[in-house]
Image (cartoon, rainbow, N blue to C red):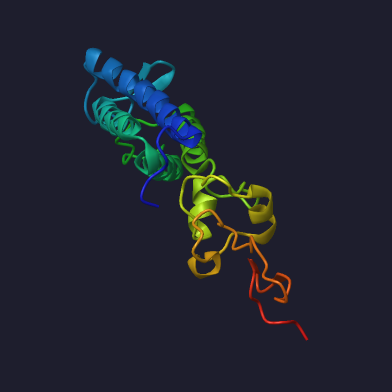
Length: 210
């Protein structure tokens, strides 16, 4: 999808979710630098209830800045950034869980860090995928509309109830009327067949069913 309609409510979810998470990570990383932590210390030092070292502080700052930058851009950029970083947090939690008690624990992870990674990852994925993946998206949802060949913004005169029942229409079904988004015949000539369901959309000139 090229972009959400301007000021769409879904954009606020992507912005605020990524922005708040990015702010928290940036603060956590900055506190690590303030405390002058050893860069690759495997024992770490407690910062805001989590174990940290210089490397983890740097990563937190970088990820926080990226999330904040994408939140400022908004739209699909913020949505995908939340999703990608969310899965990265989940993966980080799994990997660091396996190496937590070894010399490879270069990010000084403890169990609280692992739990934090899972929680933040799940939250970011939820923010990023909100309004995109569901079997019951409404017909005014821009992602539902894109999948059904409709413009992202609701057009004047659209019958959203009918579209929800029919599942949208293709460009060829709409005819010359740009507002007839569900392909519904608005005028029937005398003697012409009544509109019939043909595949999905209602077509004014559909062949008579046998």
